Length: 459
Image (cartoon, rainbow, N blue to C red; front, side):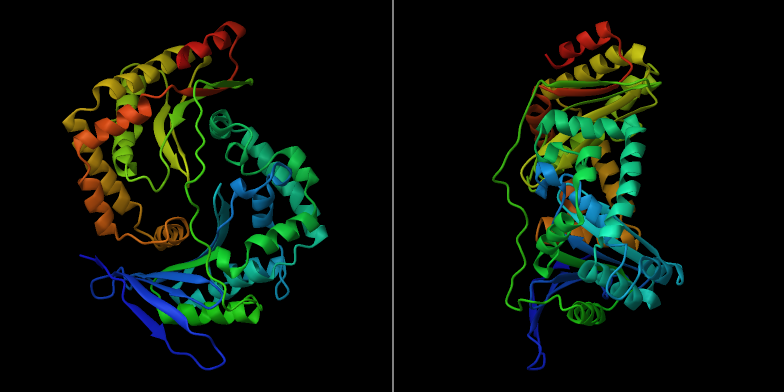
């Protein structure tokens, strides 16, 4: 079993180096699963989780910036910048960056979300110093040259086109717009063709300097690693880049929940010649800090999280109306989404939507059975553990936890919290969430008569 600990040890340093602050956040058994955090002068946070039984390590740097931090004119800048940090630094060309990791069989990538961006590399444990140096160099020393901006613009426009060619993916962007409208959460992470074409190297450089200083970053590493060595290597890399310009600066806090965005009863349809109609029916969910999120996770699993879930059984198993049907939740700092997705033949779209709406209404009014809830709790606990069986998943968990919550929770604590969810809590959150008037997003070749009936679904 693991337990929490908040023991703080002040790490001595020379007179020329300010003191770092180290904490053991989760104390593992025999060192396995121990999570430690060091905050360096200048506000850079470093969290690690030790797993001595593996021969790999994953190193990542999380930036406290996402597409919701963009103005309308800057839509897509965060994702654009993600691409550009791979294009070269003062010390390395783009080829140097990629070949360094390829030469040791490592993997390197990045992703941009609405509230954060992450850059990471997975390598053999012996090659972790290389991964730290390369990724840190990318984050602190990117050149963002105009010629690279122009070249990468074409690649990003192709990525937007690729997303547009996948309506099963595109419908989720449409649903975000349906729910949030024309604000940062409702706009696509990739940006649009117009906004990407309008972005200049100078504007992206300013965005980079504003959001990529050490106070906005969290370093995370997991695997067969030594925390103190990681701290020394990260500190050396950032000092080499001259990144610590303000030694007394403090890390920014997680986003707060002062803004709440809620909407209901909206319908958006994009007519497109596809073989299937792709639909998302949903409503406002919970912010990621809401304590009811555990009960919502159980509800989501029982309703549309697996082959035994209600939606899968009713839509696919009993009627064969869709191949893919599931529910999901998305939690942000101040709000959230709950959605049901299905892909079906256009002629079946109203049957599928009626079944989904009926199930949502039934569960909102009558709740789930104790058997369904118990099965969902078991499924959620199992999937939580199985989803953390590699160093990349561990790095994601501790990095995101530090950035978004400012705290860590052990796997045992998570399993205990899921197991403690009661049927009454699930039924209460079902009433609160599913009892709201839904909104609907559809992409597909619906005829005028079919389209005119969509408002009936959200009435």
